[in-house]
Length: 372
Image 1 (cartoon, helix red, strand yellow):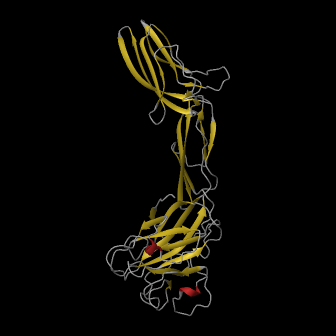
Image 2 (cartoon, rainbow, N blue to C red):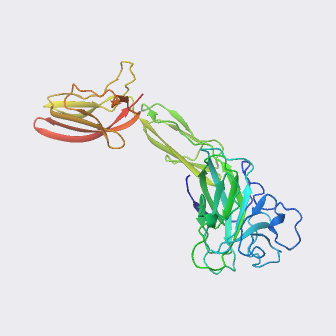
Image 3 (cartoon, rainbow, N blue to C red):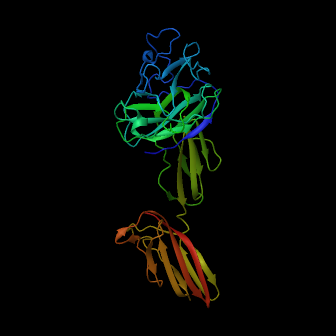
């Protein structure tokens, strides 16, 4: 499970995503509510399972501007006219729960967001508010059982401002229920009343620029992020959904998908300049390739150095974890792209090279691109 949280202060605005799997996300749908009474039982889809010490007094509330209860509503709703109020003190901690419109799919990333604020009657700085996802409905307080929120954020102590808490949750599969509450409800006793409005959970399409690959200088390739995102930023400075690259290097994109940010990176390595000089002078010369393709086609299947009048030659090759996978003491030893009799992964490897030309000892390092 991945925990990520971001906080952003926004002015009230209405925003609904077609993919939102939270029913009644801004608590506007009610049935048989008594005028002026904040009874959560008339709120459709959402349930109160606070299990408080005093159930007659300590239950989550349906808040609206003309409701008669304590504490009185102290901020207009972020969206519509209603929102939920919960007590987040260590004793009598309240929480609300909703069944999602569809079960979550294992391995899928979901963007989670909700708006929160603190009541102006709160006398102690409010704790974090968070969201917890479960396969089954929770019937025991998550605070009593010690559950931690999957997405959460600290709420600024500002009763005039709604704060958006957002993060990404990777589903284990089958989660159907979402629980909201003050999961970090520790500390001294005291009244900590908080508000929740506009809850959204929607699946994110995987963002992938593809596997690292070769690119000759001057060639062009089109890189595509996911279509339909709200904003894009490439390391080139481009803000479009796609860019054209024409030179080897590392490229990344940051994509704003609703309330969440996704990123991906791709490496284009030079596959055209197969031989580059490592050292050359009138007394001797040494060349070493920067890529090879051990795929059995008879072309560039081995990695090795070539040179003249070179002494004390030693070549060491390491994988990304710093593990030595090949060693050569002369030009006649070539790497076949295997490690422990298994094909090494395609990608970038580091080499360390030591050699002597005309009594001058040289130690250098470099990179090799292994292409399958």
